[in-house]
Amino acid sequence: MFYKHLKISNEENEEESLYLFVDFDYEFGTDFEFKGKKEKIETIYNKVVNYIKEKKIDFKMGKVFLVVGGLVVGSLFISNYQFNNLKNSFEPKYKYVEQIDIFGENKTVTDIFQKEETIEQTNESKITTPIVKETHETSSYQEAATPPNKNIIDNVTPPAPEPPITPIEQPPAKVAPAPPTIPTPAENIVTVYRYNGTVEQIALEDYIVGVVAGEMPASFNSEALKAQSVLARTYALKKIETNQVLKDNTSNQVYKDIGQLKLMWGADFQTYYNKIKNAVSETESQYLTYNGTYIEAVYHSTSNGQTEDAIAVWGNSFPYLKSVDSHWDLDASSYLRETTKEFNILSSIIGLDFNATTNVEVLSKTSGNRIDKIKIGDNIYTGIELRSLLGLRSADFDIKTDGTIAVIVTRGYGHGVGMSQYGANGMAKEGYTYENILSHYYPGTQLKS
Image (cartoon, rainbow, N blue to C red; front, side, top):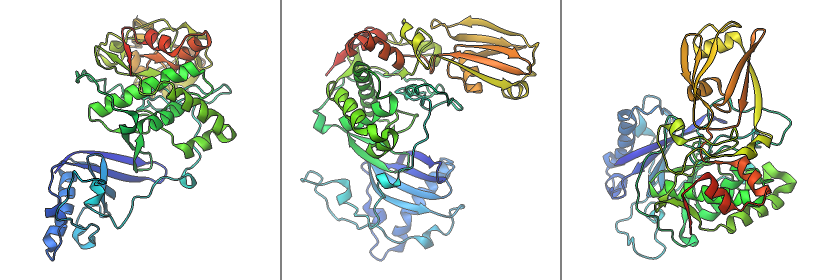
């Protein structure tokens, strides 16, 4: 009945929601029909509970949404930690339809089961003021399962969020889908799993506006915003093509709706919104391909002066994700940062006794001039491993000591693969177009529409 699931946690109110994806051809009637047959009413609960137990999902209390073909068709609320006595709290919430003409006009899945309770939709009055971050590391690959402790506050203009990139632990998969076919914009609807547990269906181009606003500073040059628009669209289309879900946080691409943008921009909302919407409109339906398939549209905030080869980060090689020059980043406000850690804290993190006499030696570097292997004391780490452990902005760093404190200087922000957002802005300032920017950071790719 269920072929996959997605658990979403809301850190603000500590609530959890569980989405169970139902096989499209599953016959709901046998579970929801309740013409005096109580045992059939209980069946759906039993299936949900059994699936949670079978998959060992850490979900003990909250709302369970049933999803068919990307649409939520119903929900159940589990309130007992041991899942006993569930049947006693169930009240029918659905009406069973004997026959449906799925090809008739205006027929949707919601015509099958009319919920008496509606899912609460996000509205501006319920959005809390977002926490301002220096940048969020997300992307279209996103480091957007953003590594912890990456936010550093200073007096400079906040760097662009890093692309939503698949986490380092989940490198981009090597897939060979059929050449993409893009329908007219009006036919493109994306399903987005929101931070508050709701699921929204949004027109593709509107979704891209929200992603560009969430991923790149609106103050950037329009050509840089256009390049970001193409990448955001490519990332989303590839996700859809490979049947993956889109979330609105750094595990995918950060997406912000109108209410969130008004809170973020305040009096500048209309100016910034129009600027980004125009950039998206001028690239409408455009996406990047390599050999006829969508590229892995990964990007990051700031490079260390050159981008990184994907193989150094995820272990997979892509012809268009090689190290290229990005000297524009050297002048970026987000390029250089310094952070400190006390010896005892550093020791507990890396698992050795670190002190002023501990030997630190860089053994090798990557093609993008980031640390490949580093030796600290008797332990050897990869640059990516130490970056994750210490919550550093980049794998290009130096470690020095000052008294009882370790001083760590980082260059760049993010995994370094694909387009540098600050580098793109630097190119745009010099007169390069978004086509120039994309062809520079993704050599050998083709811009399609």
